[in-house]
Length: 207
Image (cartoon, rainbow, N blue to C red; front, side, top):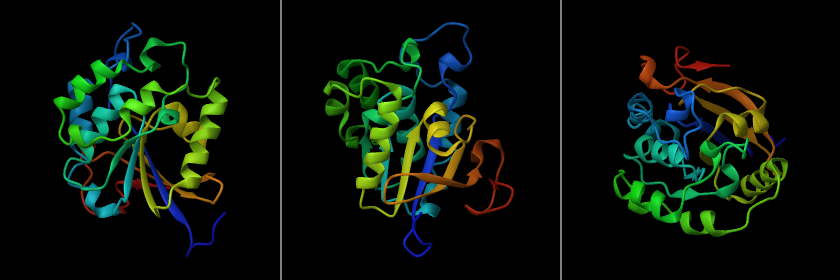
């Protein structure tokens, strides 16, 4: 692990509540519910406290929506990365939509036209297994030059990377070493649930 003065911070933000989270059915590329949109929007006035340099986003619609709502007041780049997608690929909720369908969603989102890398993320042939996908994402993290990175992703990816479970729109703060391995530091609860104060307020951050 990098020394404290050299450490990079990675914040793993789980998407807001999506339709498949509240349905008995497997909803294709499930979008956010009204509550999920509220959870993501609640972050918009808090993100400036973290000084994010880049936001890496899963290609699934619910993650892209969450990123655009949560970071709508920020200027850091929004970049889609295929290997940030959810695990359990057999579920249609975890299979990316088409370029046309996701592009239509982006046209309706704040900063949607600023999102980079969507075509490549949906067109490339990705890793053949879920384990390979996680390894590839660690490689992505290792290759990034930024010191403070946000990742908008999913429960399975967060758990695989740092061993923690995350509720909808919870954010896990981690340290990241030169190999892309992350170590959990603390949990940041979504402001949607009534948290106030600074980014490190004890009411909003649980170690």
